[in-house]
Length: 241
Image (cartoon, rainbow, N blue to C red):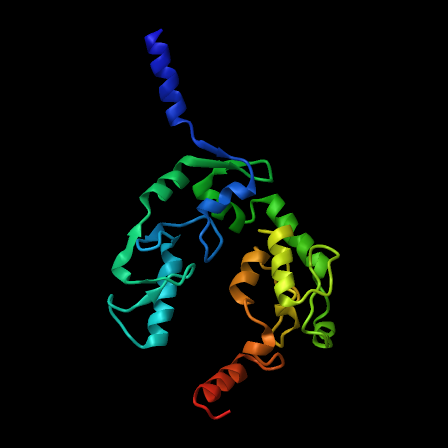
């Protein structure tokens, strides 16, 4: 009887964490790339965790902008903007262990190790993910020439439901509440000079939060390309415009 109890306890301890819903993946997602964390690294001062590759890319960009080098450069957390230094990055061993031991029952009905979920999506193995992307393209794809004729760039329609005439802030709130984590073509990007009507953001709510926190007219000229907008920003910073 004693051996039986010990055996059952050992079995329970070794059984992997079972995840069955997309919302359960959020604690294991990188806030930058929105994928399951790869080699999770934590900022010690605030506790936010990112893929090692993602946080290194962020650090590289900040160093390039500041023109400074070395580990003494003051950096900002991509999530909360708290200041930290490079030597305050530490491996998140607890989260890595949790990811390594968990399994996820995907919407395509396959049960896979959570650590392999990114590969499952990126390799095209997930039929549910492929179907969702294709549906998103079909629902909002329009001819490029029709996009360029668009005059109204201040209000937008949701690409996933019938909601229309939303300003940027309203669109962000709507997608965050109704369609969080879903793939779709960004209705703000698509009306820009560089917009591709067939490019699908795999997580539209995250894309909107990262790319469209401000009104377009405040930060850019809609009809200008990236080079023109960069020149405009430089001239403004020098007080020449």
